[in-house]
Amino acid sequence: MNLLLLLPILIPFLTAVTALLAWHNRLLQRRINVAGASLHFAAALGLLASVSRDGIQVVQVGNWPAPFGITLVADLFSAIMITMTGLMGLTVAIYSLGSIDARRESFGYYALLHTLLMGVSGAFLTGDMFNLYVWFEVMLIASFVLMALGGAKAQLEGALKYVTINLVSSALFLTSVGVLYSVTGTLNMADLARRVSSGAIDPGLTTVLAMMFLVAFGIKAALFPLFFWLPASYHTPPIAITALFSGLLTKVGVYALVRTFTLIFVHDVDFTHTLLMVIAGLTMVTGVLGAVAQMEMRRLLSFHIISQIGYLLMGLALFTELALAGTIFFMVHVIIAKSALFLVSGLVQRVAGSYHLKELGGLYRSSAALATLFFVPAMALAGIPPLSGFWAKLTLIRAGLETEDYAIVSVSLAVSILTLFSMTKIWAEVFWKDRPGSSDPPRPLLPFQRRSLLIPATWLAVLTVLIGVGAEPVLDLAMDAAAQLKDPSAYIRAVLGG
Amino acid sequence: MEVVLAVVIGALYAAGLYMMLRRSYVKVVIGLALLSYAASLLIFTINGVTRGRPPLVPEGALRPSEPFADPLPQALILTAIVIGFGVQAFTLVLFKRTYQATETDDLDAIRSTEHHKKPAAPASLAGTKEGG
Image (cartoon, rainbow over all chains, first blue to last red):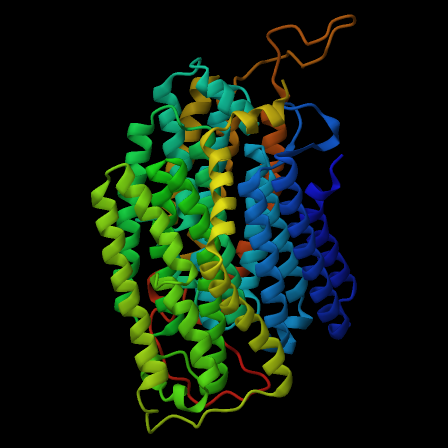
């Protein structure tokens, strides 16, 4: 029994339970929250170290042999995603201390936060399709409550849209799992991969199944044209929650797509991955064009989430080892950079009292540190060297050039320029232009807020620089992970043995 | 039996989707419930309806004799029902609270997430609500 594989699920679970037991003691909950998130991150790092040293790790839950029981698997890609979950969990746990109001805290905010982390970690670790559905639901229920918690009118309206579309997606996912079982007779991902590649299953039927999963995961990942729920809901909850959602939730959808479309649905790459390519291009373009029209920071950044999802999908669609490495690198980069931007926009709101570009201005003069904190991840997102985004995009574009898919390469370059334009717009409106006469003077942060809000935002900004400057080891790790994805025989052998 | 179930499932999906396209909150909740019932019944039917053959292993044998009712789809359905129950209970409460907050049950009328309104008064620092 490999305990390391269970810890990323058990630690958030125990943290949530302990936080619930301390229901009446808000101060204790805050401490439990930070301790739990730190332990989770430490366990995630341990798992990453162990997987990169010893290869793919497997636990057969309850000692039922695969494919009959539920399998937990961590290959490098899963371990990287778990590490990012731990990092985001800790970042948001600390940021929440200074930004979540006492009322939300005493109504179980921290318990929900860790339940969400448990669901996300479970989804990254499971090797079973139905179990993936269950983890999705755990994650969704926690996210539903987090989104509605507080009960502001806009929050409830956003939650209503978010809940409805996600339940439709879940129903579709469940339907697909049922049909998948009837067609293949198994739900274990490694076993599915083996059976589909053995040719015993009608490839036409497999393609139909692939499309059903594409729609189910596509809604959760906010792909074109299934993304409308995201900009309608993501800006409504407190900014710490938005940052966590933007860092993790859509990425779970992308993870599920990458996992299924590298392991199981590789029987007809010409059709499925070409379709993915078209969707990737359209997702990039619509996301970034939607952002151009926005004047509210959180809505603007929400549209950018969609645009970045397009890049993640591009690597999957190109389906070479280098392209998959690009997707993994991009995933690491975008989780950090995008969440950093949301955290900084929360700081801007805290200092200047608004998220709206027209009501802001002059922040470069009044708080240069804040401006720097925005500038670094914004430039990383646009792909300016030497920050993390540059290497991520470079890897994807090199992969595109190698396979001579010039259309997607030119689209991704054009979208990069528009992203830069968008970031420049925020920069000019929020930081450079003079403060509009009608707005209140900036309020200084309280000393406690200074610590709990600035530290997480700063370390994310530092990380984007570090990943950019020291891109080599990260890229090596991504290449190894991509090699495991491209050739799943090691994964299948690890799960099924033999 | 399968034919009847197939028609029922088709009707449930159609009714569920139709209800979700209505503008009233209540009908959307009903639509969501119908969709999850449809998915459960589909799993049950598509994996083969076997009457009166429980998956019991006879003495001395290693596996039940064919044909037997596969217990796995039923385990999946049971899990899905439990999850669906919890989610629907939450959805009902959420929709009721939204109805109380917005004082309308017309989905087309809830648009405050799409437009920015300048807050009436600057929120105080201690109890800032960021949703707005």
